Structures are given as structure tokens and as C-alpha cells.
Length: 513
Image 1 (cartoon, rainbow, N blue to C red):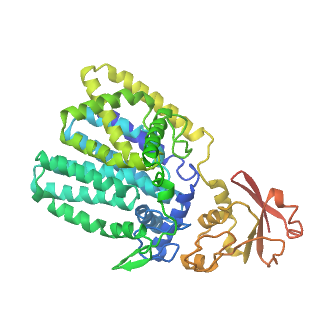
Image 2 (cartoon, rainbow, N blue to C red):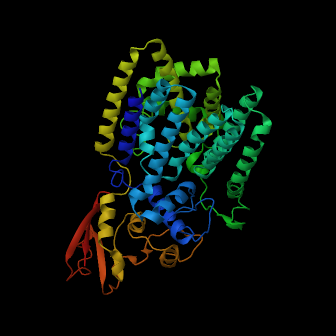
């Protein structure tokens, strides 16, 4: 089955790298995160001139996690400002997580166990999907999975020094989850406390062995814990510099978008939240086209019996690895009660479910060896079918990359002004991804220069300016018009030639120079 493991890894890597620069399109949070990442790497500050932030203010003050921005920024600083380069670190982290899981399965299990764990994880529609676009939260499940796997290695390691190193490394990687997704602030303390209770009461680890790893973990988490407290208390929600890092002010709270209503009928809202979550998995989609394709679900529907059987196994046998999985389910319980369901909001559920499915399958093929061929065929058919739909099914995945490439090719920086008449509120954000300028230049040229209240832009960015009937057109300028507004601005484009066209958000734009 070693050959099978190689084939699974090759499929996984090929799927993640294929057309990475051109598909999917650029999602709103991904595009703005890419710009902030580039700013941090090249100017040491984010788009709002905040140095060393522990959290990003985001394009509208709603906030974004910072971990992926720092990681991807280093790649772009070395390899250039390109979408492929921005997405590449997540692909590499995803592949590395798979390899870590395979390594742990080989070291603490067998080739057979490693193969099935690899197949179950690498074929997961959600894992395949989430690994291909660089949204800030998408890195979070890989921190938990890889950090937990390394911690498990440490706990089962007999050599004291190696054991300590693996425990420290595992804890620190798990701790990075807090910098990758704010839902992790709920998940992490419950998960780690539950895991500690399991391991200490069963004497799988001694308190003295975890003193140093826990101390380093707490030090690692102090900046984000301070930010989490300050950002949720109005009187403390201010931008402050603490030592070498900065805790930013968030203008828009994340609770309204992610949590249930706590003001009215809370028990009914919790019940409704749970039933909506179950419906999401039964239907095989969370209704978000960039999260789920067709109705494959995050794990394929045919795996449900294996999940149920695997859950029965881990609850009965209670091996060390089972404690990790159970603790992750416990960590997800408060999230499932109060965080509104979609595959990203419930992001810490997926790896634990996949592990349970793998355990159920491994037990089945151990007792009925010939059944493995049927399962492999079913997985192969499902993977081929999902791959075909993923790359061919027409659906919304974000800003059109073709349009962004066209804006890049216009070389807009050589013009004094680029006038536009778009009704799309995201137009200037698309322009910023295509033609980034320094954060200082962005702040100087946006609608309300250097404003800490009005963070966004609707009319101005760099040399881009909204076209109105009263606009006085400067020399050496471009005019970008939706096709339906060409007649409205006929006088403005008189004497100019239509040099280019592009399509953005189902609107055709004409470029005049």
C-alpha cells in the first residue's frame, strides 16, 4: 500500500496546484488579505498603517486574522506579487499536514492505517476546496491537525528530550490557531482543557512534562488574548502599541456575522442553529458556492456509516489518539451551539470527522479485507466526479481573475488619471489588487485621506477617480466605462479610441484612451 500512499499524495498535490493562478476567482476577503499581506512584507505595516498588528483591521474595519498574511507576505516578498504566490503557502501547508498525518500513522500504526488516513483526508471535498484560496481562516484547521499530530507523537515518544521538543512544537503550532481564525478563541481553550484532563487523569503525561510547553504556549497567546478582550469591550476597543506589536481597534464587531442572537429566545435560537447545522451536512452543501460544490458534502455522503462506526469505536476503546479526537469534538460543542453554521464557521470539525471516518474504514477492512477494493473504487469514482465538477461547474467564486489581469495589462500607473463609472462597490478593491500602491499612498489618496473612521473607498484610490458629468478630464488619462454607460458619457470619450475590454461581475467594461 506504499504505492497507494504515493498516488494519493500525488493526486492531492496535483489537484491543489492545477490552475491555482486562475481558479477559483479572488474572493473579497482573499483579495484584501493579499493586499495587506503585501503591505506587511514590503512596508512593515498593514493598509491602515498599523505596524506589527496581531489582527488586521480589514478593508471595512471588520477584522481579519493575521497569521496567513504574515506567512504569504514573506513568499510574495521573495517571489513577487502574484496570486499564485499568495495562494502557494496554503497549498504547501495543506500538503505538509497530510504528510505529517501519514508520518504519524506510519510511526505509530502501519502502512495500511497510513493509506486509509491519507485517502480519507486527501479526497475530502472541503479540504481540497479550502486549500486552494488564501482566505485568512483557511489555514486554521491545518494548524490544529498538524499541531495535534506532533503533540501526539510527543506523548507517545519514549526519549525524554525528543518528547519535550515534540510537545513544545506541537503546542506552539496549535497556539497559532488563535492567530488564524477568531472562532479558534472559543475552540482552543475548550479543546486544550479537555485534552489535558483526559491525558492527566489517565496518566498518559505528567504535569512536569507539560509545564514548559504550556508556559511557552501562554506567552505565544498573550498578544491575541489581549486583543480579543480589548476588541470586545467598547471602552478598551482602541488601537494601542504594546511592546513590539499593535492591538488594533475594530470598528465592526464580528459577532453579528458569526453568532446567534443572544438577546431574544436564546434557547430557541440554539435549537435552530443546531438543526440548521445538521441540515447543512444532510444536504451536502452550506449554500456558499466557494465552500461547497454540488452536493458532495465535506466528506462524501457514503462515508456516514463509517463515521458512526468509527465514533462507536473511539468512545469504547479510548486510545491516546482517540482522546485527541474526542477533545476536538468537545471543543466544537460551544461553537455548534452559538456560531451560525457554514463549513468555514464550523471549520474545526472537519479533521476530527475525517479521522473518525478513517477509523471506521480501517476497522471494516481489517475484518473484511476484500471490501477494501470496493471502497477504493468508490473513493476513486467520487474523487474523479468531484474534480470534474470543481473545475467545470459554473458558480460564483469571487472577482473575475480575467478582469484583474486585464487591469494589470493596462499599466494604469503610467497615466495621470484613470476615470471609472462603475456601480460595483468592489470596483476599487479589485483595482487595488490589480495595481497595488504603498499603504501610505493608499491612505493619502482614498476618499477620506488617513481617516480612522471611514476606512473604505468608493470614489478614489491612487490615480483612480470616479467619473461624473462634472469631471474635468486630465491629459494622459484612461476612462473605464460599463457598456451601458457609454452613451451617457459620450462627450467625455469623444476623440478617444476603445483600446480594450474586460468583464467583471457580469458587466462588460470598455477602456478608452
